[in-house]
Length: 328
Image (cartoon, rainbow, N blue to C red; front, side, top):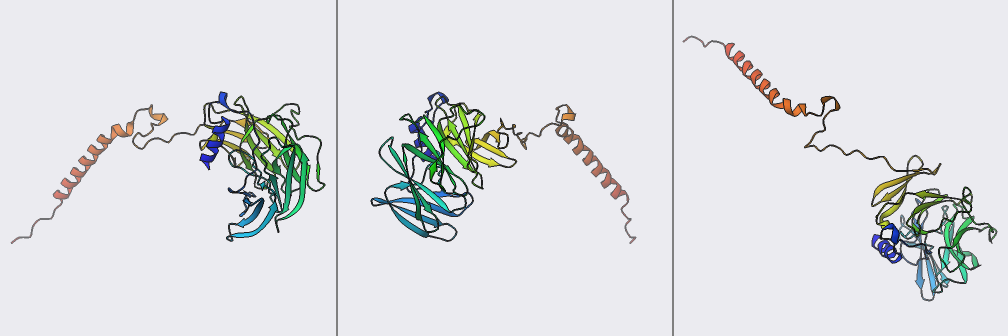
């Protein structure tokens, strides 16, 4: 997986210093691979190419092989969410699955989506939108679908839109950060993580300048917040990963080590405290009350000498108390 991410990011110019980073690009839908699963669930949905159509499979890893499958006319895939292989399109309640069409025309004039009932994998709705859209996320109950709308051939010119799956209509207003509604927070999605309830989608983006920011999307209430985070200088961005930690904390890891922490309630970002390095067993740390001098090592010979003198004294005492021999 990491090799695939590295190849993809290299093609985009992302495995390089900040000055050489790319400036955007949609994540395509995928066929095959690991498919999509709801957080904490054992069920996976995979789209596979099958002749001129698509075969959708539902796999329960706890029960064994393929449980159900459905053939769809046309080329559809599981929507991609970020270039680390993250996918989306499945509601947390495991009832709604959205697949996106795969086309060789870029940018496409129309975008086609198919909404499936995960029980029997039957199409519940087919959506056709004028213009170029990609799927970004879906709410836990499958009511709201979030799309990235590319407004021109420039793939860095986009907006997030909400689609009401119950009423089958696209909301007119884009989903923006209410604190800075006019600021354009656009870039390339590197990695994504979701809360276990499927409500919050956290995506780490990189801009063309190399700056990083987190797009925090509340899929239940159609709110979004953009948070700037410090960029690791000269780091391999294919090793960047998001992980949720206790105490309302989102951890940004670089090469497996925490680089920055974001409070998911206040969106405040801080650097993690330095982890103290434990003393080497061959070089015991000196006590603060001993002035830095290794007294235990210095007193060891003295202690050994005292022990030897006490042992010799005890032996002499035992010899003096030895009973006399019996007369012949």
